[in-house]
Image (cartoon, rainbow, N blue to C red; front, top):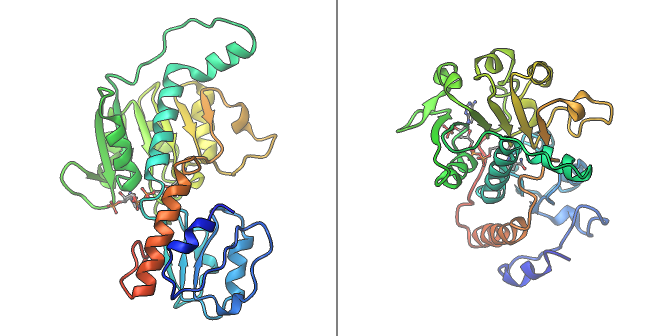
Length: 294
Ligand SMILES: NC(=O)c1ccc[n+]([C@@H]2O[C@H](COP(=O)([O-])OP(=O)(O)OC[C@H]3O[C@@H](n4cnc5c(N)ncnc54)[C@H](OP(=O)(O)O)[C@@H]3O)[C@@H](O)[C@H]2O)c1
């Protein structure tokens, strides 16, 4: 049981039961006041909320929480994963950028066919990378880009030193060779990357999405990919996962990963640390970290 070693680290004033999201839930759901959701986007663990009348806090192990909101009763507090996924997701963003630019998908296909596909691909060096959503993950991406000899542009909701706002995005998009998305999925960001957004990207530019699938208009992206004007690397898609006959699977210039940004060996130690810290705060009456204001 991956979380068993967490129990001895939690203040003894709390009674802890472990639910992995797959086996049947433990007895006594009606007494639960603090619920750490299992790390999954499946609806079953969320449906348990209605069987927890004493619930006061939901702790998510995901950074995005748009999928939780419909299940949350008024008065129940929600904390998200905070900085838990920055390391792993930023690492994947770099992986997707480098793999896509340097031709790794073609090399793997060549290897499968015993073909030596010698060719010159774009480097990441000397490129301009535009980070759309300069929060925890966005800034972790920039830290990892240090050393790759790139220029970095940043966009967030609120302007600050070196960070532009969304109004400036139309002028920044034509400057970027790589656009990486790490905004939360909200009403404002749903469909943010539409035909107009994509049309402002440079010829040959790469779009990387480690945010949420619905931030991108899939049909508009498919049109650009089929024209050969843009490339993309998506960890998240709309629909997710794409059904077997969906055009995303066969789109030219597209590298797909199966929503694994946060799901690496970096997850469990950080998740355990977060759970122990939050339960300790809860038990001692300290303010909880990463509380989401709705
Ligand atoms: N692929 C994966 O496995 C994976 C893993 C973890 C997270 N994610 C996704 O990544 C998202 C970002 O995570 P995070 O932890 O970096 O979040 P975060 O720390 O809250 O940062 C979000 C950034 O987006 C900006 N932003 C918010 N709304 C915006 C809007 N309407 N327009 C423009 N910018 C906006 C924020 O601006 P301000 O700084 O001005 O507030 C902030 O810079 C999550 O919500 C989740 O959906 C995916």
